[in-house]
Image (cartoon, rainbow, N blue to C red; front, side, top):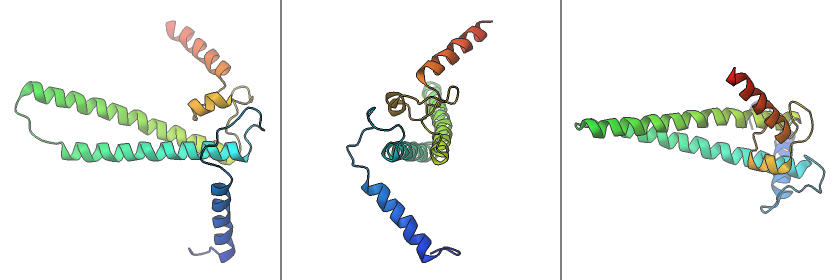
Length: 157
């Protein structure tokens, strides 16, 4: 136990973890006919986001190790240019993934605050299909389409 943590706190935390593990079967998929963002759906999306985050961070660690090991002198100019291009592409990919991790963290905060699954523009529920396909979504499909149309109009100016 850490300083300031009582046995009761520890058992309550462990009990919450056990409860979360027990109430969500491995084959669970959110369904439209159940209450929106019930405990099972929230836990499903929390796990999905957490697993995705771990996968991205593992990939990032692998890339860093590969880049550190891959630093070498290549005498052929064409080969060196090719390797530099590959490294630049890998770094851009990792940068996108770093931004994705930030969005996952934001989605996890929304889960903790009870705001996950609701459109930040309309306040309406985001469809379960959309959340399952893109768990970091912050807008309903309709609101996202309106946003992209406005963005396109302003970009064309």
